[in-house]
Image 1 (cartoon, rainbow, N blue to C red):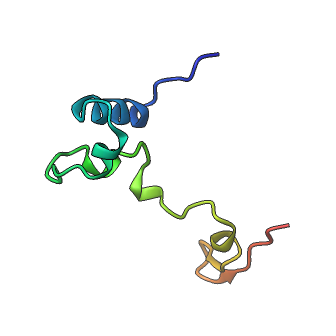
Image 2 (cartoon, rainbow, N blue to C red; image 1 turned 90 degrees about the horizontal axis):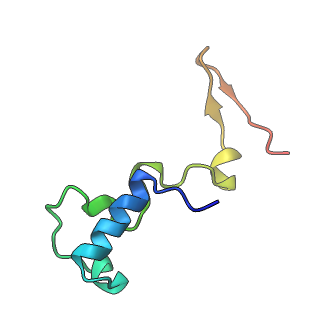
Image 3 (spheres, rainbow, N blue to C red; image 1 turned 180 degrees about the horizontal axis):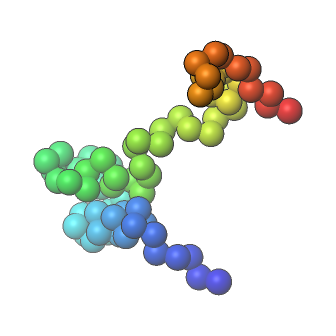
Length: 73
């Protein structure tokens, strides 16, 4: 099965196209006013840190307002 072209992959391809195929130029892109700028690496910056072990082991508030420890086993 071919890789599905997700919105983030489409943004990455557009950024590579804009910078003539150079990943380095995408990295140092000067167009910080571009709406795609935060997504240029093909990652969603709003999800940074989610799913990491150190975050899973931390205490997490529940709906009742009490803290509950998450068991990472």
